[in-house]
Image (cartoon, rainbow, N blue to C red; front, side, top):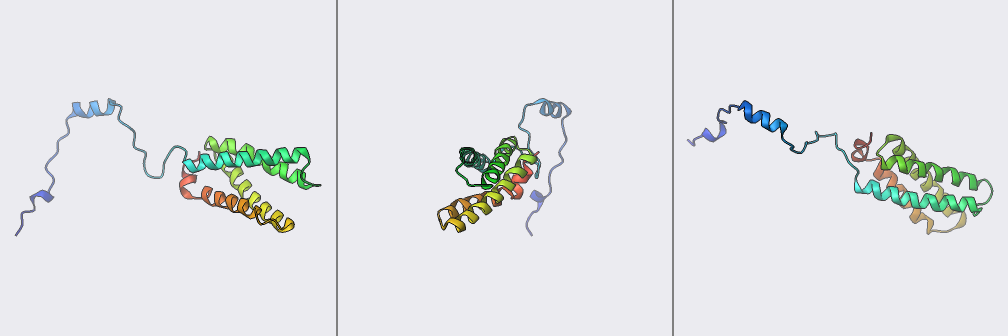
Length: 146
């Protein structure tokens, strides 16, 4: 029969002086599961891309490229996304909500314009916006927001 002494842990006594030194030391803090901090690289990339696309759309709306009431719709969505990007970069929930709503609305808008103008190239932009929506709706992203 094999010896199972290695399975029983030895009696451990805690030295109070060593314990006090450990509490005062500058050890890295381990974040508990589910309370992660910091920005994911995907969030920063999405924020930069959405800021660029929104700025181009807003300048286009201000210059009169979009006909009729579409000008005001595009300007409203682009403004919403631009404001949301700055909140998302600060990891705020309201910024996340504005950007995720803007991603979905932009995706639907690109599909609509692609169908109306028979331009299949806009479907690529719609796919990007939809992928950004799906990425931002992941649990790992939402856990990092305040």
